[in-house]
Image 1 (cartoon, helix red, strand yellow):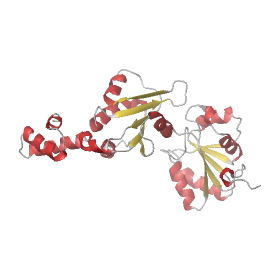
Image 2 (spheres, one colour):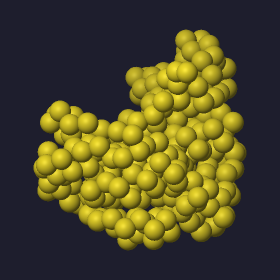
Image 3 (tube, one colour):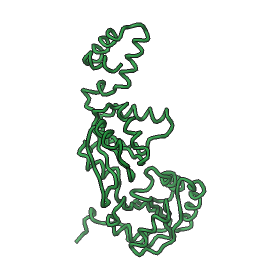
Image 4 (cartoon, helix red, strand yellow):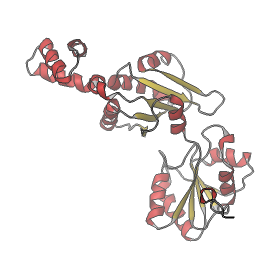
Length: 287
C-alpha cells in the first residue's frame, strides 16, 4: 500500500546545514506545535530575538539547547557567524519573540544571505498576529496588504498613509501602544473618520481584545485610556465606486490649488464635483 504524498513529511531529525524558521506563540504558549518543539530540541543552536523571552518557551517545554541572540542591534555581525555555522554542517533554528521570524525583523536579511550561499531553509509554520487579526476582523481576507510598522520618517510615512487611504484591499499594520493614539489621528486625516478598522491587542492571551469600529469612535474610546500590549490594526479597503470620495486629503489639495489659482470656493467645489462625480457640498466642506 502506497502512502499518499499529501500526508508524507520530512524527517523529524533536523538536517545538517539547514536554517529552520520556527514559528512561536504570539501569546499563548499552548499554540506552539509539536514539530516546532522537536526542532528546537534537536538543532545545533537557536538564534533568538531575545534569549530571555525564548527561555520562557524552552523552560516550559524542557528544551535544553544553546541560545544565541540575533536581533536588529547585532544582526550585522551575527549573520556571517550563522552562515559559517551552517557551512560547518550545524543546524540552526531562528525564532522571534512572537510569531513567524523574518517578518518585521532582521531574519529577512539572514534568509537572504542563506539563499545567496546556496544553503537551505525550512519553515516550521506557526502563529501570526497579522493573520489572526485579519481572519477575526470580518473584513475581506482573500486579498490583503501587510505594511507592518509604518516608517518613522515623515515623507515615507505620509506616502504609505496616502496609499492606505486609496487601497481597495484590506490593509494590516502593527503599532506600539505609546504611538497608537497618534496613529489613529493620522488614519482619520488620510482615510476619514468614517473608515472602518479592527483593532486587536493581547491576541491569544487572557485579556485578548478585538474591537471593530469607525476611526472617529476609536479616537473617543482610547482618548483617556491606557493602551497596553502590541497592537494589530486591520483597515477595511474602500469600495471602488467611492474611491475619490474617501481620498479626502488628495481632494482637499486639488481644491486648495484651484482656489490659489483664483477660483472662488464655490466655483472650485462645483468644478471638482462635476469632474469627480461627487456632490458639491461634500467637496465644499473639505475646505
